Length: 163
Image (cartoon, rainbow, N blue to C red; front, side, top):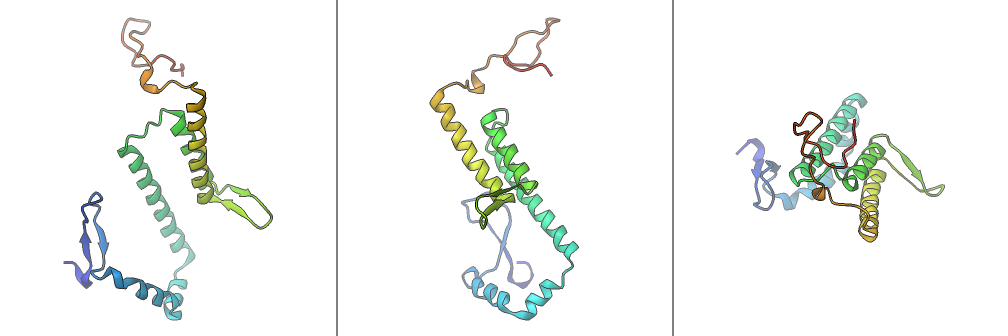
C-alpha cells in the first residue's frame, strides 16, 4: 500500500484506470468542506501564482478532452458520418473559443457549457430530422469503387469527392 493510506481501487464495473482513493471515502466530504472553510488553506491556495494555476488548468482541460476522444474512439464513433462529425466539431470550437450565447441581459451561456449544450441539442435534432425525412444513406450502404483510371483499386467509395 502506498504511503499515507492511499490505495488503487478497481471496482469491477469500469475498466481498471488506477483510481486513487482514501480508505474511508465516506468520511472524506467533511474533511473537504472543513478545508474549504479554513482561511489558512484558502490563503495557501491563493498564494499559488496565476501562471501555475493557468498551466494546471490547461493540462486538466486537455486531459479531459483527450479522455473524451479516447471514449469516442473506443466505442467506435464514426467520424465519417456528418451526423457525428459536425456537432462534435462545432461544439469543440465553441468550447475552446469561449463563444457566448446571450439569452437575456442577465443570463448567458458560454464556453464549455455552450459547447456541451450545442452537441447534445444539435446531434439529437439532426438525427431526428434525418430519420423523419429519410434522405440520408448510412455509410455502410455505400459500395466501393472497384478500379481507378489505370485499372488498380482506388480504395475510394462511391460518393467520395475528389480532393
